[in-house]
Image 1 (cartoon, rainbow, N blue to C red):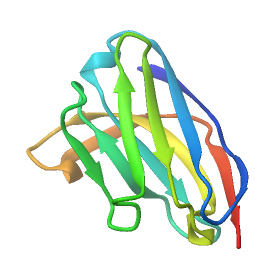
Image 2 (tube, helix red, strand yellow):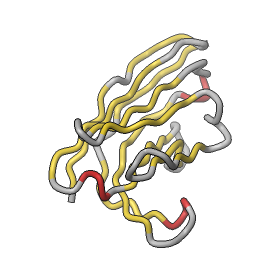
Image 3 (spheres, rainbow, N blue to C red):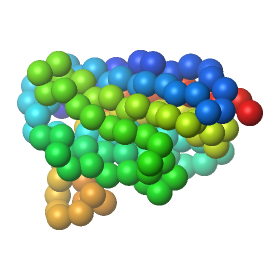
Image 4 (cartoon, rainbow, N blue to C red):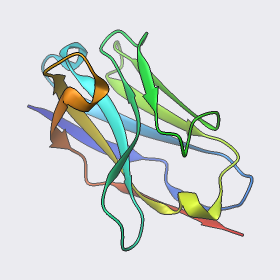
Length: 124
């Protein structure tokens, strides 16, 4: 397994930007598909974005598409989520996760390593 630590959360105003960074330690970082999930207060955890091992394949949920950008640096073992034009609805705990592809779709990724999360609060 890989150990994950998120950083970069904070409190901002609507329209601002934030960058979240997930730093991984352990072996075989490049074998993992990486995802950023979020959990709004009172809601279930949902995926916001994901990126394949090489960085060329990316997935975005409809709620963040066009505003968030996911990237990874396999030399530094990091995954970054650049969040732009933030909205109050983006307020959530954000989690980084490492997973293994079990099929041909993004929904087939099994995430089995999770960070502790970083909180993002967006005020109107």
